[in-house]
Image (cartoon, rainbow, N blue to C red; front, side, top):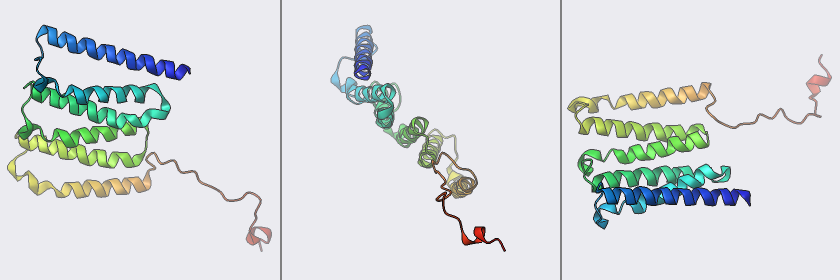
Length: 186
């Protein structure tokens, strides 16, 4: 019962903070009053509620994935709709980056080595996309794509030698059984 009371206070606190920040932005003129500009809040607010769930209880730690996804996506759309950043043609790499960050956050909350592989791939795609869009990477950069294969191969080898977060429990077998070889060493 105490946990439900704590969760309720967290949700109420986040709701009041969001309402206060929104009203402050509207009354100061930082944001326009039109729904065409504020519609991303319908994505952002559920993300913040998922975040409150993830931080409130160990049993709801998996909520960090949708929390990260909806919060970052809502922020991106909010920046687009208020013309703070350019539209889709230059910022499309944010989408795989957001998914990559979702996997990173899930790994932080529930460490499991398999989560880092898709995170690495998605963040790499995002970084290359931004690099090409903002001309940080030249037009001949496509020639270097085999580096991805080298990185995947290196990761597989490292995973073989190092145990990244797996929760294996090694069983020595039944304690009472003894081999014939152990009974008669000769």
